[in-house]
Length: 87
Image (cartoon, rainbow, N blue to C red; front, top):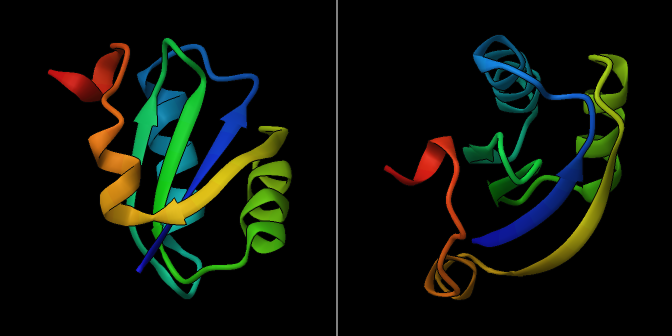
């Protein structure tokens, strides 16, 4: 399983987090979605294509860009700087 980290703009509240999560979870190949509202970051585990993820977010009204792609275990060991998903 791979992990993709996206920088997402336009998120400002819990409703945005739910909307972004739902838009991504509807895609084939998405296994898990973690949203860091404060940092504007989204971590997606699975086999989904970066372009499909970014297109789904754009359609939902949240422009995004890929920061990196790596193994899911490596993405998690880097730690998180805070935000709603870290408690």
